[in-house]
Length: 262
Image 1 (cartoon, rainbow, N blue to C red):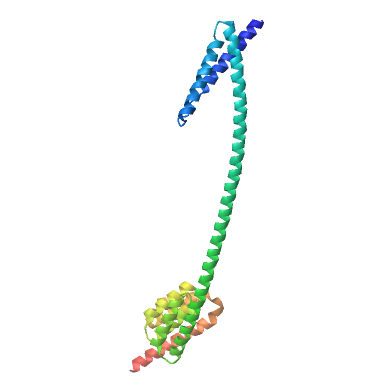
Image 2: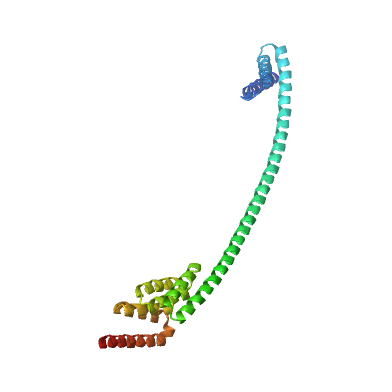
């Protein structure tokens, strides 16, 4: 029975020794010295395997002693390697944390820089808008003075300059449209009315000025269309719109009579 156990143990040691030899692989990037050490280990393991497989009991015993030594050494090396691995792993974790912290810090800095940039841009845009609005207001004032004096061409010029500063003003579009109407330039007036309605499609002045232009151009269908739009979009001004419509009819009739008398 003991012999069977000894034989089994011997077989196990041979198998383990062969596995050790099989696991010995040379790194392609090792130095010449490291390669020689590798080959020496291979030779040592081969000798142990041969001794363990020998039919000579003394050789087997010697092989067992060497196998025990190398197996014990392998366990110690594995423990050391595991320890190194753990240390390296811990270092990796620390490095990862450091990297993550750095990335987080850099991301935070980037976000703060982006936020500052956006705030700066918003501030600059607000300041520029304020300057443009002030310029537009000054130019509009000059245009209003020209319109009051009956200098409609000058009014058109200055309202145009004001619109270069800000195109989102229905007041400026309507004022220039009225100037064009006074000059009899109804098509141009209609274009300005369209722009005013793009800014605000419920703008009553733009709707009624459009109706006025179409009435002067003799387009009764479009005239009625814009009167209806004015009523639908501004129902609380229906009374005023009805009065506007009556005045337009009276004006057109008066113009027609005047033309016939001529």
